[in-house]
Amino acid sequence: MKVNMRQMKLLAPAKVNLFLNVVGKRPDGYHDLLSLMSCVSLYDVLTVTFGPPYSSVVCSHKDVPEDDTNLAAKAAALFLRRLGKKVHLKIKIDKSIPVAAGLGGGSSDAAAMLTGMNSNLNFPFSKSQLMSMAEELGADVPFFIISKPCIAQGIGYKLKVCNNLDPMSVVLVNPGFEVSTAEVYRKFKLSLTKCKKVYNLSTFADREFNVLEDLCNDLETVTINDFPEIETVKEELLKQGAAGALMSGSGPTVFGLFFKRAEAKKAFNELSKKEGWKTYLAELLV
View 1 (cartoon, one colour):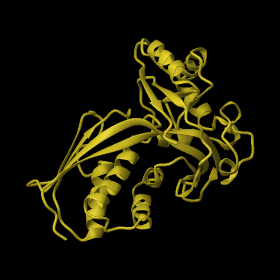
View 2: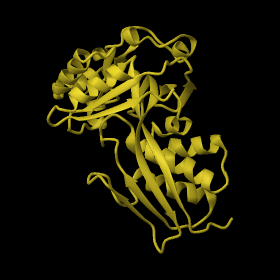
View 3: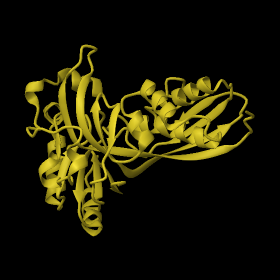
View 4: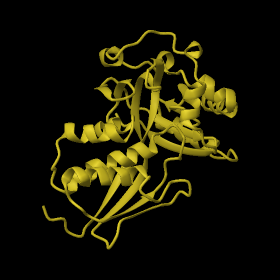
């Protein structure tokens, strides 16, 4: 296979956890989860150039590594290694998704690299082969390969597409600080679980998701204990008319769901005035 000098642009969407139940802790130290995830229309943009004199990665965000530890660079290296080709790439990442924010930006960048390169190089790998590579890169990466609302089980590799989500507008508010996912899970105790209802992998595949009843995140208690401002963000979103508000992942980003775009836009305009908060208007990608 000959790889010519060419360039491609890739969109990598953020995600929100509409439901996140920590089921238990595994012998390997990871936690088993049951989570309902959906992509939202907030994107990183990756520009990939094939065939420069040497490989490089640059990013618009100062905290994202610009070496071979970058997750998008890791994805490209893994893809090319499996392909058996040595090709230099320049990867430029324009970050819109906040970093260490519970929105899966790094994982989405990695998945975009895998699917983008597969498409650009005439699909040398099947979907299942891409999913296998994604599992080597991180727990959320397989979800972004599917890029549809999914119920995830285990550490995130067991996925079932959920077709029962209604389109909704989303206002995302990042309080302006980062949270360590590893630290949140280290502090988490099963006795702190908030999601009292019993769900399983088929729950949201068999019925519609109820914003008023089903929004829940077991990790909120831990993160809010260290960062009380997250609770303030939730209260502000509800005050602005959100049907429901929840922290995504391990935080600190909080999202509010709105049935009407006009109401979401009004809330976005108001919350954008808050000093130190980064506010985004998006849609669930259902």
